[in-house]
Length: 295
Image (cartoon, rainbow, N blue to C red):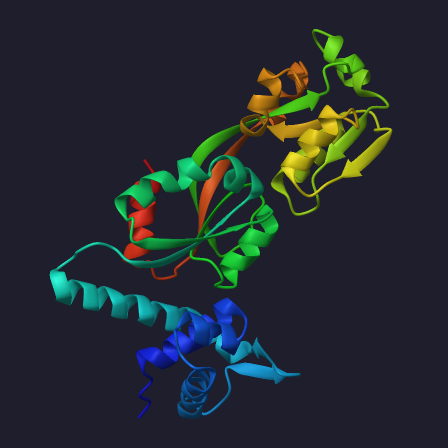
């Protein structure tokens, strides 16, 4: 009979999350030999390894990937059982792993997390910020519990819950020739230089749609952060499609100018959404986060 303890499950899950057995032992306040013994005993009971050992590193194998979400669910249910038995539903505690796109993580994090943090101050939040494709992959790989991103083309296996609308603007430095015109048409953009996000970003995907409506650009400068693009545009290196929430300060200060191009309006609205792995167990922390966030 298999008799895997919560401690063994913790070592397994934390080893995946931390990237090494040593880091997992530190998080769990164990010695490395104790953590190693717990993992080895778990693998012995399962009659096979959960990791491939490659040059001293642990890499989750196919069986480990299959069992990881079940191990996390068992730990969540164990915590919820103990909490309910102790005080019939007291304060939430534990850790919630949240992923966000750059727009959400850099400019809307207070809006996203504020209600939940106030309602559950004892919960530790581990926030990961990246482009939309990277965050979606991490969610499917069980590295995150929930995510908030923009973008319509998302991989299958994800449940999408609408959260907020997000406006975008085509921005230029105030002395740019296009910034002096009251109304722009497609031909006015001929030969313009653009500053764009990296592949995998939802803003990059929208920018490519915009560029598809316009004459060919003179040059394209690719940067991986919205703030870097803002600074590049303000410095006169080109024009860019940017989230309105990210450029409010620069617009107010006169460092950027929003271009008036009504024909681009269909590309300047998008939806921010919460993402969840379809069919995966939702523990008390995740349910509380959803209640606090979707309102």
